[in-house]
Image 1: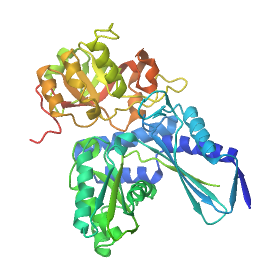
Image 2: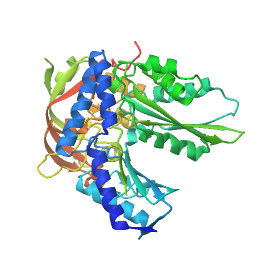
Image 3: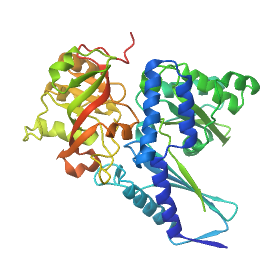
Image 4: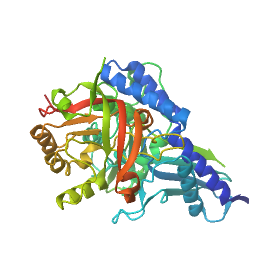
Length: 289
Length: 174
């Protein structure tokens, strides 16, 4: 059995916190640059340019991309043939504190959600999966709360049609409007129970965004089968971008950068659908030990 | 060329929704908990922390200032969370607000009534915004940590007029 000391975990998490908060994901930045190229609206183009410039400054000067350095969400895929020597949860939280301190990030966490006193770094949300193998995968996702506040969950009837789901997703983006830093990445979780649908909606934001050259959406739709998840993703992206909320909510054709959907088996009596929006500063960093 | 305006609020009245400006002057950071306390203190007539009359509030909780920098990342937070507190502050003389996103009908009406202005700052661009901050000093509620009130001196901060003193809203449906 492979043994990994918790010190290694702490060190890794600290580095991931720094990387995620200061270096915008290459796929996200690439998608924004593509949107900038395709955007024709003057204000939208200027807003996208500011976003690109912001990412460059953040990377160069090791500044946080956004002052909201987020709720640190940590996904751990723990190989079942690995033995962690020490307290894993404690090690992850220590890593978050270490990384956030080093980066001079914001103490956005209140340990008591009701009393709301004593802001700090600690209190990462940790999701652990036991998986096959002898490796440990750690993903740190600092989730901004402006967009997190726009999350929604609806328990549909099992007889609900795909049109109703589409309407719910589009409505969620409409409700967020210009408030939560569009262009968004829209995470949708379908199936499981209430908690899993919500988790899927967030976790699917980690999926690498496609960087297509030019506007190939049309041809992609034609090549996909209606009713399938990839088809639905493209359809929804088109519908959301026709809302013309645009970057900073000032109009233009870039309201969302992508729609990512994840599904899971569910019960015959229901159909849970969750939406988790990410602002344009979709941040995460991954390491495999 | 974008118009450069100073923080004297007689400049504010001439601004129109949609207009892009460069703002230079003093702004005070204040977000959720600071608003709650500010209202409480002002209602009780507690001693003034700073003059709200003619002031500009910036809905922002920055990251810590790294060594050698004036301030950390400091973009705007969602303004609508401050909506329930804003009409009171406008009545007390608040003249400008900087944030991101929409405002409530009540806020828009109060902005019109008290001839104030609501601006948008580059949202989700905290590293970029930090470049326009020349000075930052704590003013009140230090125990609130990132939510404390800071006095910021900004130079040529790019803003967009979102709601002007006539109540015209950039996000309005007309």
